[in-house]
Image (cartoon, rainbow, N blue to C red; front, side, top):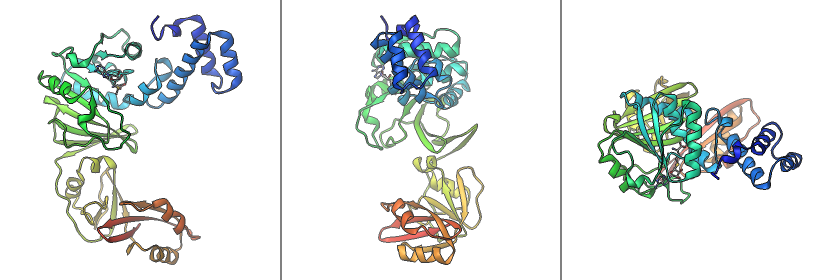
Length: 378
Ligand SMILES: C[S@@+](CC[C@H](N)C(=O)[O-])C[C@H]1O[C@@H](n2cnc3c(N)ncnc32)[C@H](O)[C@@H]1O
């Protein structure tokens, strides 16, 4: 019996129906399910219901899909997957081999943008769920291949590759830690087909293969780095921000960061820009500068107009001594204070200590340049 056949049985359907309508965590609900099906079916139905709950807001139509929790965590959200699929589509590509397809997050994006994905994974349960999930959107079963991607399946088709990575729990990690290893990706590049390699947002750019490096931001979070290969590589680096229904893009090559004095406006910068080392490029585009190399914000005499920049009047720059900052806030009727800290300061401890009784709200930006620590108040 395959991993998901139980979802087609009468008992399986009934239990899923109960879990979809009643609180799945309530003891009464579980008891009711146990009357309908054997313990294994109830366990599987609970796991599927939980995976669907986690997928809502990330994957379209999650409640109609076959999912597992890890598969959902590793998957690409439907909006990001569609965005990437459109980049293939713009080159006239209508078939893509989706290497390491997982539960089919990326493949769903291809299907929704009119591209037939060929699904490849060596985990049979995942592959079966991906087939079901893609068929839900495509209206027909997609081609599938239960195979190790190291055997180079479909070498003559444009590709999307989303490897696992060695578990290590760090935010920053190396390309050399992908599973299957970089040699599998090198062999794929050698086919000469256009393609994309999806990596975690914290990957070190140092060892990456040549191509366009794109960082995708979804809302406030960085979700993935994509290395685009062949004609899909259009610019050296690109920041893409899915901001609700709007997609912002900024591209270029890393440039040195202009350094200068405090100015009338402090601009907070969206994280994708800094992740790509495009802060200098963005600063030069808008005639801005930074206080020093890693202050994390940009300064300028005028408020710049860009979705990537959030200007706010700079009211004061002080040495970052908590008594001085507290005095300034008191003199200016400060109440609720938000602290943005960099370089090891504990922002929440500062926030607690600076909370005042006044009506005005301020943000304190703490920076550290060698021994010089400063507080920038906006
Ligand atoms: C990061 S997930 C893919 C997520 C997918 N792109 C999505 O959006 O849902 C990685 C998948 O690679 C599969 N995998 C790992 N090593 C593989 C190999 N050598 N060959 C084929 N599949 C592999 C795993 O089974 C897992 O499902």
